[in-house]
Image 1 (cartoon, helix red, strand yellow):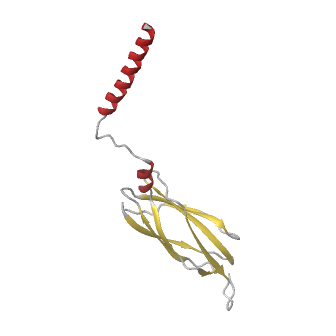
Image 2: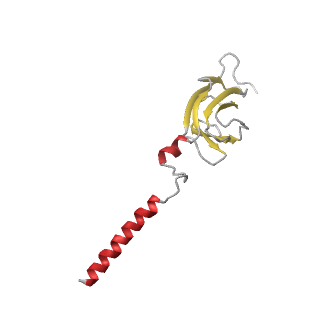
Image 3: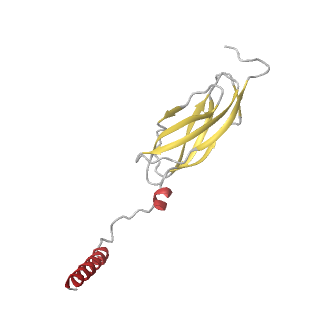
Length: 148
């Protein structure tokens, strides 16, 4: 009986100690929930690129618009999801904005094909955006062909 009373007293002391410890936790501690983390990830707002381009080797301009709360975008990675022959690439877009911003890129090819790319942005804290896919068709100009 005395052992049971000691165990109950010890359990009560542990429970009371836990609640006192919780009540005395500093209020200024930054508790980050999973939803807070997901809202601070870089976000690709849009990719502007023509649906059709000549497969003549000439560079075609594209533009990326993004939102990066409190951090600069330091890496843009363009993966190939589907293509006949097209290489992935990546670069530092040299963006100084820490909020909404954008940058341009160029694509070219000599091969007629349907291409789907997947873009991922990374900020200076190593956080990655959700992937953004876009597609376009490279075609041979029927009047002149693809001359070297």
